[in-house]
Length: 511
Image 1 (cartoon, rainbow, N blue to C red):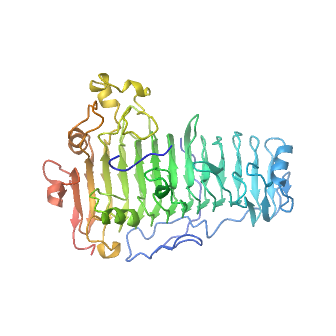
Image 2: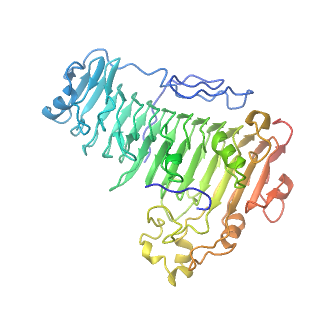
Image 3: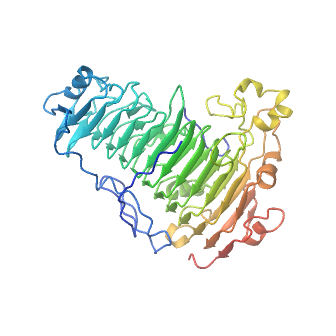
């Protein structure tokens, strides 16, 4: 499943949430401490979901008709689930609930089962059990429950382990587990929940068979995940972050507070399509706040990005790497009108980016295409060519395969954003101030039809990637075509790049 991102290398009704306004940055208990914002910003009134510190209380009494689960009886929850019919409501009493002392012991819900936690109800894996809830039953609901202490293996999840469809996870804390706290199925809704301190992902939206669409991730706090530091353990694996999305066709990610994760905050990787990422606050993530990789058609709007990528960006700069590591990283992804979605572009607008390590990078790896050994995405091909074997010589050198065998960073429209940089806050002198559109020189494999500068020329001048009507505050620089072409604002706006028409730059105001 892992994807090396190294540069050489349908919507539900909104949920009304009471989210208090924030004027600074505040970490939740158990999460890494976040430094305070240095100065007030236009984004200071953006509300965030403080659900880890202030969880909504569950029902203090069992609802009518519910089966009561006793924490004093080991395995009571799994046993009563087995003996009850589908569409049963289970009410977990206050206290610590346990499964049998078998690593594979878990709860296997039936269709339509509902699990409600009383105030203080915790399902604890005790570092013994791998999974909390599994099986293929659809339309399961989990509310007001804390799930912790499970030890799922790499790439596997604790809740909805088998990616069943139609699950609803609300007002639930999934925390301090190994692997992924939560998997996802088709039509899943994750709302007002705390995904905290999990070893690999807060949520891994991956399904080995079938589809995931209509995914809603709303009003959650996603904090301190990837405690296992997987990118260090398996360098370049692309297997970590707050939330990872794989081949999701239709997702609404809104109103979440994504902060202090090790690595990326949100990462859409491999043939995702039709995303709306809006009204989120993403801050103090060690890596990029948002990665959209070999995917299609997205709207990214009205988000606040603060103090992201300080750890990874600084580390690579200190190593002498000239690549423009950024807060929003669009990698081999773009708008494609032939693939049905709510937009046929990647639209990035009305966002505020304040004191991050650089801004937005649009990137394309000329050596990464269908059937290339440099394509590390597990043999996947583009959504335009389902049969990977078709992307081979001589046919790949001719239309339509020459165009369709390559994931393109194209039709990206970046406008109406505010980019603020104060280097004294970020504590940097160079390489933290860039906006970029670029590719590498194609070299590999020897039968590649994309060798030389043709991909760099295309992403820079021919694929309708456009910045315009933005506001820049601070000493910003710009990179075009390849890492060596570092431009000032006038060169960026002038021929041949002609970017940022209607935009303004105040180089001093950011410090």
